[in-house]
Image (cartoon, rainbow, N blue to C red):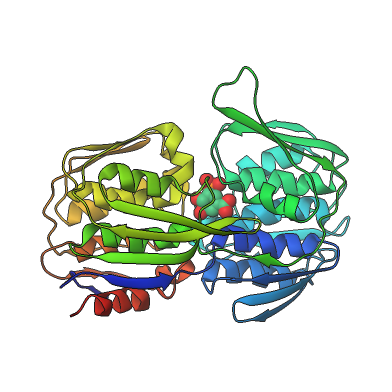
Length: 434
Ligand code: S3P
């Protein structure tokens, strides 16, 4: 697919697809809850469709109508055939927690995914779940794997990675366990599981961990049952980030995204964008289980920044597109403590270094980050998306700022989180025409 440079400013007010993280959870929690959960604002992307497909295969009644769904809670009833999680790590990891505790006792569920998902680490979830009494076939380090339903017990977990997927999986299992399940982790990862549990009637304790600076503990007392209720999924800030980054990059732009999540565990990108010199206004307006609002971005003189390890959980999915901004900003940018990016849908540190290198930027890959020289004059090039939605969308944003057209090997992965991206970008291009 051809990726064209901007030929004028990007202007307009837009909405983005519903937040992927909240949507997966709303569907899965609805499936486990007592009664009916009515969900609005669901995205059309392939990842959330994977969660929906797997839940249906488990016998859950999910009636979907556009961006709305009605989920009837009940037991998960694993079929004999593998459950296909597609490209979605969140689907696989959260469902491992759900199946370990909530599948019909003695029944085995088989989980599988595409080539990318089969490479991703699952031991970080299956290891702690096994300590709670979950039974897996084989080493359970990678998909495909099999988990058998059975009784669980509450356990205190020490999880060295700040992963919301791991935390979510363990808390979901904790709902079915006898006693208290506590997850101790480095601070800062997204808190959607905790917020939705509370909204659905299950208390969650969250506190800083005494004697462990930078760590926090969250805990749930089991057994506990979520209660079905209406849930509104806000706009996905990680999808909005591509449009807002584009606005910061293209002279004369002004892009406003409405109805987007302003959950403080997801706004790290806006803080860095501001620190880089873009003009960013965030106006809160509306709070359900998640705070939402409107964000407007206009360009400013961009300068390089330091992104330290403790900032990474709050912008982990936005680092690829921040790296694009860093490439053209004045002065160097240093990203550290981001080794997790190597085990996302692709090795995102390598993929971003490859992408920016092809466009003519100077980037040095580090084991846990990137050094980006800044000041690059990007030139159109042949780009690789590495089969990763966030790399493809970052490439499209970078191409806007390049001299000459670029070409990407395969833009289809964009549909994993943001199928409407190219149409929305076109609308913003037209909005900028006199
Ligand atoms: C997610 C958590 C993050 C993020 C992913 C979605 C979630 O992964 O990268 O896109 O919904 O919990 P980790 O928790 O593994 O960092």
